[in-house]
Length: 633
Image (cartoon, rainbow, N blue to C red; front, side):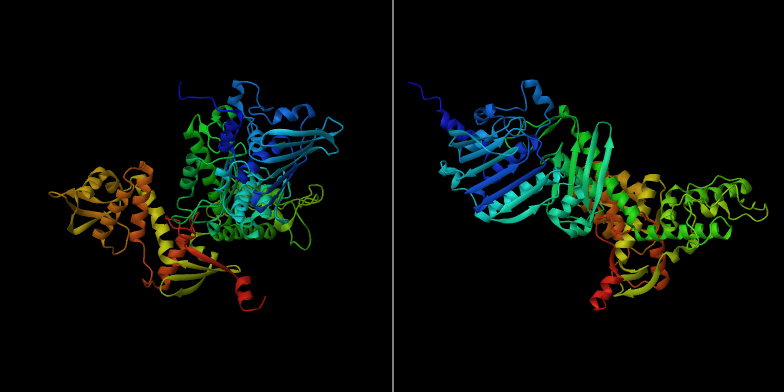
């Protein structure tokens, strides 16, 4: 007689249950996803003793039809798909028909449900996968399912469960992930009678983040909203101030399904380079919407992994979505940009008032788009130059003076005075986007205060004080300058009076010879000088007295760490290291003029507040915070 036998049904069910349900959190995940598929708008999860002794999930979805209840507890019984072809276009959370059968196989269940199309409800009790009773019961539309004594009949699995509070924490993680993907659903999670999570279900992801994480994270996230071809990325990303040393607060989804995917994680990391400090990860909720036919979700028992038809497209769309969200925020929130915009508005407003196009705010409110365009059009006729694009300023102007139906220029009552040829209202170049504020007056954007510890420059912008790390700020500035020269092939080389010889190991020599073009584009003049020796005849002309031999070795070491990465990664590491080593150091005394010159150049950058390695260049302190510390507030 052979050794192979067919397992009995009970054993098969327990094995299958072990693949889908490994702890109480798995039960919650599977059953809550069923509630979502049932179109519920309110879902309540209540547990006792970490979900080991008790779990109750209540929803207001469509409910089970009475004729389907018994079949629902059978393996591979589902309403989500009908044939093999349906696996290629799955849009529901569940589809295998294993959840209820798996949960029932290792616990005791009481289910009360009422379908929206039926007049009465049904109550069913199940133990170890067997239906014990089924009866008519009063119920409201939806489903309430109670699970008792998880793994009571599988002691091998039961003994591997953690402490109650640990299992409860896993359930909280599951509810958090699902709630962030479904802000239109109100979730309530109760642990031992205490409400842990309560979301409003407004449909606004920002509100859900506030409900779960509180005000600190709510105030420090920005929108992700990016679409290209047939793919869309939606979500929110946190600013560097709330970054973490782990990926614990990274929530990634495909079509609302929480997944863990290396392609998406790598895209996020790449997009956050230079924006976040090294080894810091952003808080992010990233939901990628794409054609279900382009992914396979049937590759993992818990459906936490997927396969993409084209990983490169997924990488690109996530990278550009995250990158554009961060860069847009940098442009909009940089204090220098804000002050520069305010000054543009002040100047335009002054010209409008001086030339009779508008009057002071306390007398009337005006449509600024109409008034500004009329002023520009008049001036254009006189100086014969195109009017600047004022669309970026109109909203702020209207915020200042307001919109009203009564126009400032009523053609029936008065005319705008003609502007004389000899006295134009303004020079057109004065209003061009890049030169509304003359460069020689750039210092008016901030007030220089001083320097402390020969390392930190202090400036004031409106009601905020900024403490600026001179090394990090100069590193960012040099990086942008070096990168521009590098990619423009504008060689900026300083010849050395006495060439420097550098002895290298065999590995270091290989790195230099394999990346010779990179060194030359950056401004180095190198020559092989015998075995494992390089002669440096010229160095990048970046203006400071630098120990180039040491910097050269540091760059080689950085390139060795990136030896297997793509070209763009190598170039970034190369240029960032060059900028870091060339930048002024902490405790290097700069005179007042040098400090102001550094800040003047810093304010012109789109993102002046992180160095190339993601370290902050400035620390912001508001007037309110200072006054609060002195007990004035």
